Image (cartoon, rainbow, N blue to C red; front, side, top):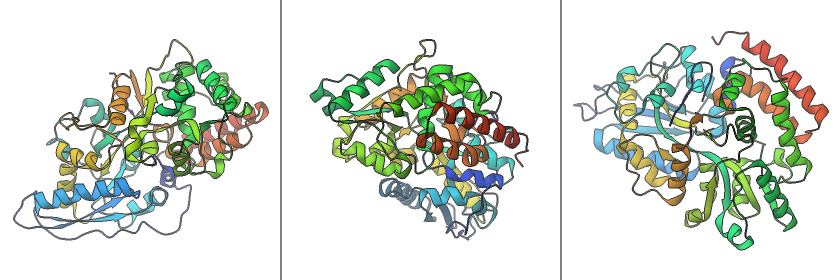
Length: 445
C-alpha cells in the first residue's frame, strides 16, 4: 500500500490530542506534568555492567493500556537489569501540559505521536535526535521511518502501534434486524433512517473532548474531495472557504438535521460514547478501534463489526484510511539520555510490541517481525482495513499545525455540532480561513 505519511506540510488521536496547541504558545495551562526524571549512570546498554534508573512519561492512563505499558516495562527491566519508573498522567492533562513538560523537567522517555505532532516539537528543539537508535532497529517500513523523521531528516520518534478509524457496528444487532453494513453515503443515510424508525439511536457521537468530530470531518472530506485535498487543506494550501469544504459541512449537517445523531454530543466524552456503543444504545459509531475496544468487554469483541467509512465519490472510493501511529520520544532535557535511548531501543523491538499487544489487543503491530498469530478478530479486521488502503492519514489534529487544530478547529467544530445551519457554516468557514492565514503566516519556532 502507498503510505503518503506526513511530510512537514502534513502531520499524521490517537485520541485525546488537545494540547499540542500549547506548543505554539497560544494556550496557558497551570502546572506541569507530574514527572520526575530518574538519575543513575550506567552505559545505557541493556545488560550493561551497571544498572540504572530510567523514567517514562506516559499518557496511557486507561486501565488496559496502562497495564500493557507496565508489562512492557517489566519485561525490559527483567532483560536489562535497569529500573523504569512510569509516571502516568491522564490523557488530556498530558496533552494539555506537554509543551511546559518538555521545557521543564521531563522524563527520560515520553509517550507521544508520530508525524507533525512530533515534528512540531523537534523543530522547537524540545526533542533529542534518536537516529542512532533507529540505526539499530529492524522491521519498520520506510513509511514508518518517514513518520518518525523531523524536517531536518533526523529521527525523533519510535513507533509502537497504529490503529484504524472506521465505521463500527454490532454484528448481533445487524443480524437480528437484517441490516447490511453501508458501502456508500446514500446507504449510510438510508440505514441510519431505518435504525431511527426501528427505535435505535442511529449514530453515536461525542465532542466534549474536542477531537472525536475530526474523524468524521476527515472521512467525509477524503471520500468527497480526495486524499490530496485533505493533505493540502491541512497544510494551509487550500481555503476553508472553498465550496468543496462547505459541501463537506453541508453533507455532515444533513445527518444532524435528520436527527440521525445521538443528541448532546458536546456534553459527552469519548468514553461515554464508546460505552453507548458497548451497551448497544447506538447502532453505528465513527471511531478508532481502541475507542470501541476499550469500552466493550473483551468477550464481546467478536461481535464488533468494522467497515470503511462509506464512499461518496466513486473516484475516491474508500482508498484513504485514518490510522494514527503512537509511540515514544526522547525529550531534549532528559537527565538520563543513555538510559532513555536504551529504553527506546527496547520499545522499538518486536518483543516489546508483542508484550504490549498481548495486554491491549485494540491496536495493530507496526513492526513486521511482531507476532500477529494471536490477533483477535477485531485486530485482524482492523489490520486488513489498513492494509488495503492506498493512502494513510494520521488524523486532522495530527495532520495540521497543532496551534491551528487546538485554537481554531476544536472551537469551530463544537460550534458546528451545536448549530450546523448553512448560514453558520459560511460564517464558520470564513472565520477558520482568516485564523488559518494568521497562524500559518507565523513560524513554527
